[in-house]
Length: 344
Image 1 (cartoon, helix red, strand yellow):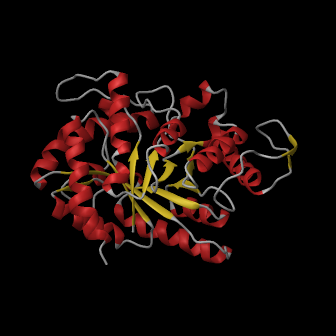
Image 2 (cartoon, one colour; image 1 turned 60 degrees about the horizontal axis):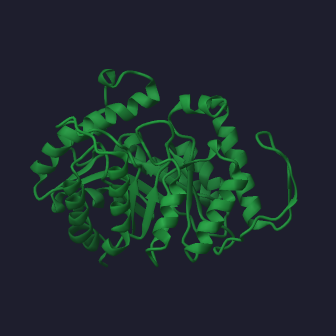
Image 3 (cartoon, one colour; image 1 turned 180 degrees about the horizontal axis):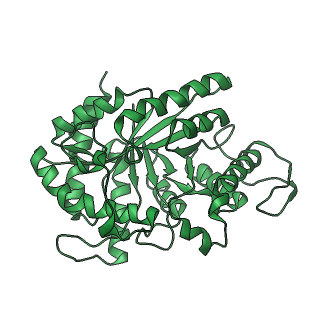
């Protein structure tokens, strides 16, 4: 089992005090968080992308390039890149460059995002997001695998006999994953030959085995000659005791989740009703992995038992939490949970 560390870079006020750090301080916290990933033993570092909101990371490849110069082994990816908002040519150049300067450690996970209003700010039709993503994926792969590309699509200008530079270190190209939220979308990612990225926030736990099975069944039917790759993301908080972890998340988890869900629904955060798989922190089958090191070890083990996936990704720096408690949770997970899962 691989372990990833994820940040989405939200910049929220602490709901307990109402105080919010400066953007400069929040950026420094994010850099501190991601720089700790390789020494802590994580296999991958993933940085999200958002626009025009209190998520203040809009260009994850800058953070990844910064980290590439400070590390030697950890894989460097996104979680996720909002592909419809990008020119696939520029994105292919960015991640080919990251792959070169990191010595072949770049990854790209793509998705359409959850904020329809952002599409309007980019002068795009949100109803065509899936088509834009599909076209972008096909062009990315073509640019990375062919030396003379002539291409015409619906959403960008045509290309005539172009060669992308630099060429990627990894062959045939930088690994690609697609954010999925159902057995059907997982099967589509597998049919295309790409990895899948799954968030436990999207559905109750009993759905996860069907999503994993749908992906692997479609992969086998497609007959790909390379290996599949599936990542499962989870909000995670570890404290010395389970009660302390739940008391802490009772303050920080729910306001953050109502704010995030409001971005999808358009409702005011106070009017959002969160589903039980998010609110029941004591449920070992819930979406939020929390508790003492022993309980978190058990909860991650339960997720692993749901089916075949390759990477568990920890997300812990969200919702305006006090930074010392963010770092304490990360330290407990990396020293008291990860080694026991990774042990043969």
